[in-house]
Length: 116
Image (tube, rainbow, N blue to C red; front, side, top):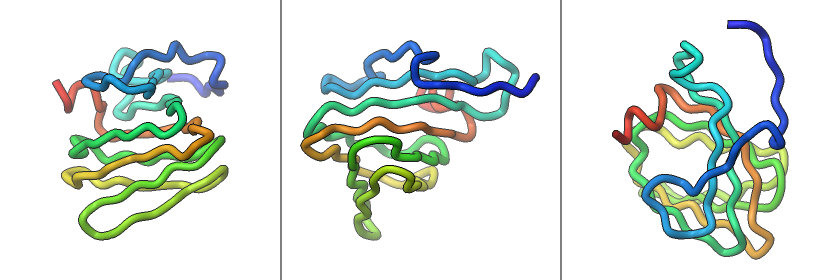
């Protein structure tokens, strides 16, 4: 695999699988590229809630807006430049704030395969 860089304009955003809200994801690197990880962008509309039991280890970098992530062990709020780690097996609730949010993510292993 060659060295590459990405911008959010490179991502084809689609509704997050299994969600009805204004939450979109776009993978840029995944199993199709013979990579052991998934890399992509996410977009959360204003005041959206996503509940998930993490099937993978997920690292989310907030690029714009703010998100709160809560789980059994507590809650964190992250804004631009901050990173949230959500370990595999944890049940989390991700809530965007009134301005929504744009994120970049890295998961291990591939989240689509793990959710399948």
